[in-house]
Length: 289
Image (cartoon, rainbow, N blue to C red; front, side, top):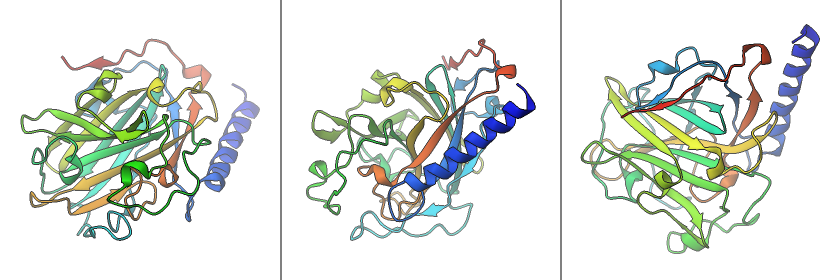
């Protein structure tokens, strides 16, 4: 690749970043992350242990936004008392039409396995959101969130979903969340797994780490080529006392915790191919036996 080609390549990325901020919905500019299409020789094991991510061109992005409440009139969240109480970052890359996501969470009090399936958001948990076609919206004028009618009050379409990673009582990862199936916003045990999604969580001295593998076809129909944008968000729930969750943080601004049914709160992943001179085809991701 010539010097001129490199300069043109990076200029195009800059234009995409500026454009993506302008087209994001909501009252604030959304967050943007450039997800590289990696073809170099690496080996990823989906086990929650992130040492095999070293050297991969997937920079860490901090979750900087603190959620205020669950809906404008819902339960108030407590702000984290500091980074040890709750802070996080994520990394993401693409290989062979598959998204790989790693999340590192600082949390000094871990509460897993207290809630039944479907209520994992009340425990410590990671939420990953996708909007496979941000140009399509279920509703441009969705009314305010109503706890009594939320299943019929959504903006999701078939390309959108929330994947929630939480830990069960037997240290087994549960994949919950919501997706639009038929005309209902719902999820069933094992549904995300049946679509090829694989996840893991591992505890450590400062909190925990999580890994997620999501086949492109679950949400995205367009080829993952240069300049393609995908709606995306990462959120973390924090429970410090075994009751309901206490705090929540988000990558893209979402003060009232609406991402689980409103895609306008999402940020953007911008797909960028790896440089041609470093490309290889011997990447072989592995699953833990």
